[in-house]
Length: 304
Image (cartoon, rainbow, N blue to C red; front, side, top):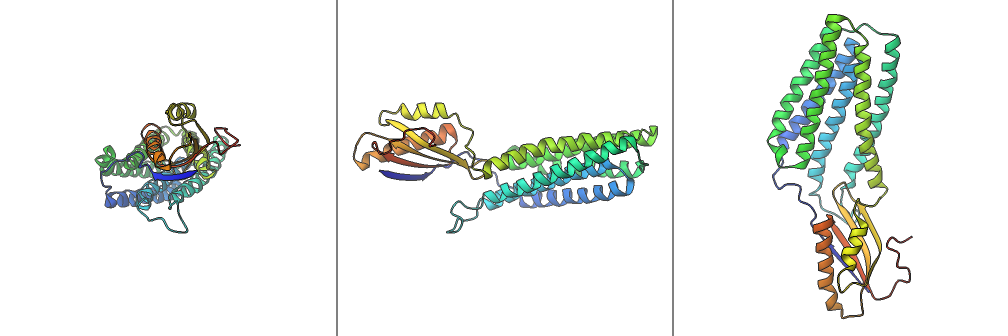
C-alpha cells in the first residue's frame, strides 16, 4: 500500500502580469463613487441612488477580492496553513454576499413603502450624482480594458464596471423622468429592480462560497472519470473518491486505486499516467492516490 501526492499545476489563468496600480486606482475610484452615491441618495431622497451605491459597493469589494486573490496566491504555505491561504477570499465573499442580500431586502421593503407613500426627490442632485457614477465607471473600464483580454480576474472586474455603468444609466434616466414629468414611482421601481439584481448575483456567490466552505465535491463527470481510470490495463478498481475545492479554481482529488500485486517501482508510471489524465481532462490541481492490492473490503466509489 503506497501513497503518492503530486501537484498537478491545473489550469493557467493567464501569464500576463496584473497592474497593481490599475487595480488600486479602480478600487479607490469605485469606493469614492459608492461614498458619493450614498451621500447623494440621502441628500436627494432617492432610494435608487442608494441601491446603486450598494451595487457599486458590492463591486468594489469584488474587485478588491480579485486583487487579493492574485496577491495571496503567492503566499507561502506553513506548518499552520498547509493548504495555504486560498480560503480567505471565500470567507470574505461569503460575508460580502450575505451582507448585500440583507441590505437589498431592506431596500426592497423601503421601495414597496414608497409606492404608496412617495417622497419628494431632488431630481437635479439625483441626475448629477448618477452622471458622475456613469463617467467614473466608464473611466474604470478604460483603465482595465487592455488587461481584461489576458486575465480572468481583470476580466471579472471589467464586467463588474460594465454592470455598474448600465445601472448608473438607469438611475440617470430615472432622474430625468422625475425632473421633467414628476413621475415619483420610477425611483422605487428602479430601487426594487437594482436590489433584485444584487440579490440574484449575490445568491450565486453565497451558494458557491457555502459549497466550498462545506467541502462539497467538485463539479466533475465522475462516471466518465471512473471509466477512464478503470479502462487502464494496470487498474482493477478505483474507490473511496473524494474531491473538494480550496477556492473556486483549485480542485483537490484523492482516491484508492486497486492494482494486481506488483513491485513498488511499477506503481510510479501508473500514478503519473492517472495524474496526467486528471490534470489534462478534468482540471484537477492536486492528486493524492493510495495504491493497494485487495486491501479495502468496501469498494464503493464514494465512501459512505
